[in-house]
Image 1 (cartoon, rainbow, N blue to C red):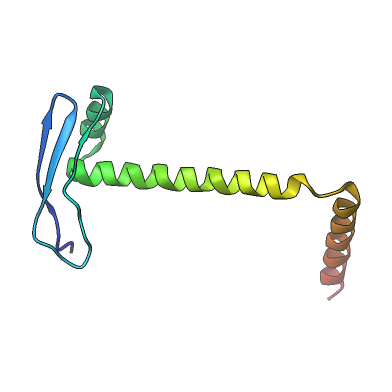
Image 2 (image 1 turned 30 degrees about the vertical axis):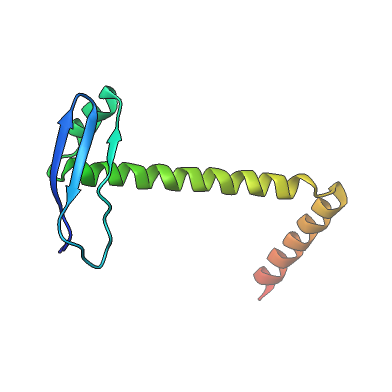
Length: 105
């Protein structure tokens, strides 16, 4: 059960004004943000039983995770960009030998 629920969500021409209830263990911050009308329409159409604020938070968490994974991909690409062909061949040989050893066991 959530102890700190959003008390009210008001949609006015593409912006949500959110106010939270009393403070609890999970901190919520009351913030007013402007959203495109199409974003508001999407949130309203997909929120189901949950509040618009919960849906917006859910969508933002998904976007944050996507952005973090994209950053990790970029870091991995940059890290492995500098690996020489010789190092790649050595890694492939080690992998093959490891697989063979596991099969024998």
